[in-house]
Length: 289
View 1 (tube, rainbow, N blue to C red):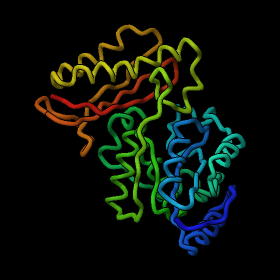
View 2 (cartoon, rainbow, N blue to C red):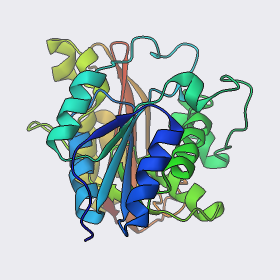
View 3 (spheres, rainbow, N blue to C red):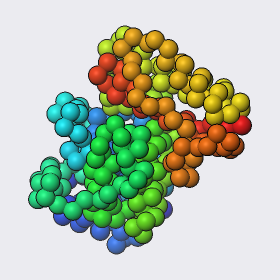
């Protein structure tokens, strides 16, 4: 890999980030980008460590993107821990932290600019529960790709539908970036790491384990086919007080469409549920049939 200057630079404008990364690229360095909304945890840090393996220069964006929040979602209370995030990223050797304000990213406002449409998969599953979410997510990711012009961008498998839609956007729009998807990072008891886990009280934290329990039940039943898989996965929710299942679905990873009853092969189980007022998601690959 190419030798580059060390030290973490925190920048807030597009011009600053471009200048910094252009200088590194001109010196022959490769660039990896890790897009985040901050409130970083070990799942994010796994993405950063993977980015460090893949490129000379690692840039991490921290931007709570209002376009991907619905009117009744948690935009205002979404955790913002920029100072702690920057300190943690510096400890991991991140070269650039891009922390723009809203006006920097959307100078025409939330409703006044060009956006990316996620297509038919964008209105399924999480898209059905969060209308417009994936259009907003793809819009900010496309902007970040154009701003940073990374050679590789790193995402987490925990947000499986997001990773699929970003991959499809890159292919459909011929964007010159390679994607790398890191397996979901979990707590010792199996709960997928999420910035929203901090909303859970101790009782809810324990109840949230039903998501991973449902995936384990589905995996155990997958050899018996789709019907048994679905029955066992949904049954895992039982009568968990304070937990409301949003969806439990099995999709073809190549199309993200629900699999047919006679499907045989590798599939992806997606689950979402509300634990109290906190919405959590998870997923796992299974071998059906």
